Length: 134
Image 1 (tube, rainbow, N blue to C red):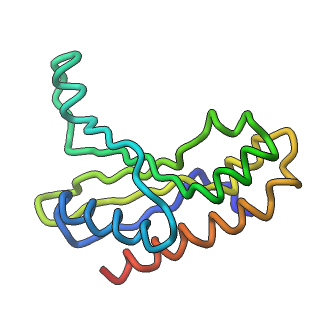
Image 2: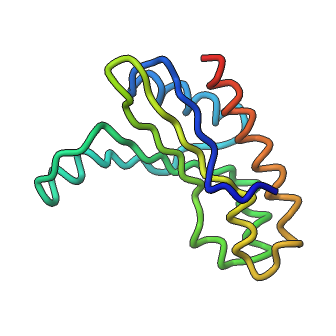
């Protein structure tokens, strides 16, 4: 299992279009978007800071989350799986998806989570590979 924090792909589409594509691709792999945080707007509102367009999507595959939580309730602290989308410029975006395999290694029972982590990683890598073609 990879020990990198996440997977990264550049998409030659603007931010909003990339978010729509990512959301649709995640849905095909059984993930729904539970949260959407507009970091730029939040930082502007809360502390008056300017920041580049940056959105954090909280993605969850209920079946995989259920299996993982049955093995280790502490994993709830790492859910949902975060996906960030940030604007590289007006016509391209950068997508990063958290690595479930690495998250599983933080558990006290990583061996019990290996199967679900591998399945989640496979689904998310399918999304990454599809984004590479977008």
